[in-house]
Image (cartoon, rainbow, N blue to C red; front, side, top):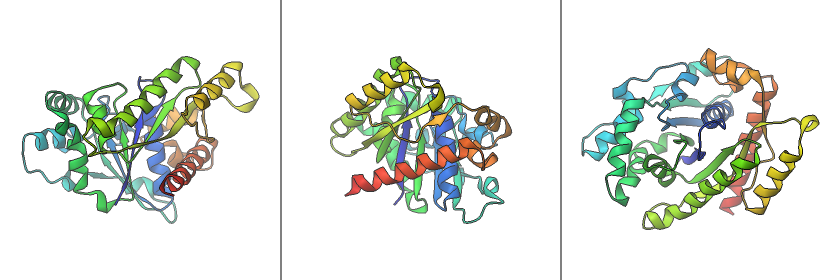
Length: 276
């Protein structure tokens, strides 16, 4: 069955969606079957992969249908993006269950109006297709919300994305706390584990500041487990967004690609350790 990993942040801005789509590309380039699920109301994962999802082929529509007891197969709603992998050897599969702002918001209202069992709706929806994938990445809303709770309830592991700013550390602690509280909130039906913190927009070693050191120390003190593989600021990452391809695919020999591939490898190493 697929490993389901939620990519989370308490607030918008740290690069959560960019991290998600580039990790999706990195895993697919390494031969894995990957599904990216766009739960962020801004619905930018599709743009990053070069498509604009239709409302009736969106994750919000799928969730809303399930919550209203409608029979709606998930498979036809998924967009295949293997064309982005052309030219690479040994690739796997890259699929997207896209987001559309209106349907995402409608689904969130429905989840918020239900009991704890409605929080499990995403988990139930993904159960239909999880045997078709090795990795399912969940791009979560940048907030503490009903939809974010549904994403955590569907996940096996959770990573937080943070900038190297001391003021962002409490937000990472909130993500970890919500992850650890999910088991009790779902009556033990979900048990996600916090995997660590990705430092995005990091400064290179030659430009590290005292704030960088304070962030590292505070993350360690709080058990927020920063990954050694940091994603540094680079204009190639944002320009790739404009091209409709993640940087790890558009610029395979450049620094951002290498950093995302290192991060993907380190994530797998931590998952293996968690399984021991």
